[in-house]
Image (cartoon, rainbow, N blue to C red; front, side):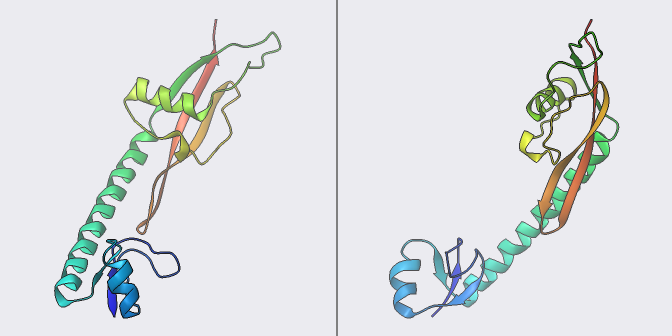
Length: 153
C-alpha cells in the first residue's frame, strides 16, 4: 500500500514523502491516527499544491530576512555600562539584553537563540555580532548587528 505521510514517522519517512507500507500498517495505524493518507491521484495533486505553497512561503521568508539583514547593517544598538578605575567593564551585555535593546531602540524583534556568537559583549566600543535570520531549503541568511557599549557616568 502506498501512503503519503502527513507528519514525520520515525524509521519510515518525513512529512510529504510517498512510501510503501504493508496494508495492515497503513490501514490500521497510519491512516486512523492521521499520520498518512492513501496515495491517490487526488492526494498527489493536493501534495503538489501544498509543496508549491510551502516553497512560495519559504521564498517570502528568505526575502524578508535579506531585507532585515540589509537594515541591520546600518543599526547601532547602544548600551551604557559601569567601568572600573582601570578602564575595564563590569559584567557584560548578554544576547538577551541585546534582543531587548533592539526591540526598545529600533522596534526589531529577533530571538536571542538566533545569535551565532554565543559570547556576551564585554568590551567598551563597538562589537559586531552575527545573527542567523533565516535557515531553510533556500539557504541561510546571516545578518550583523553593531553593539556600541559606552561608559556610564
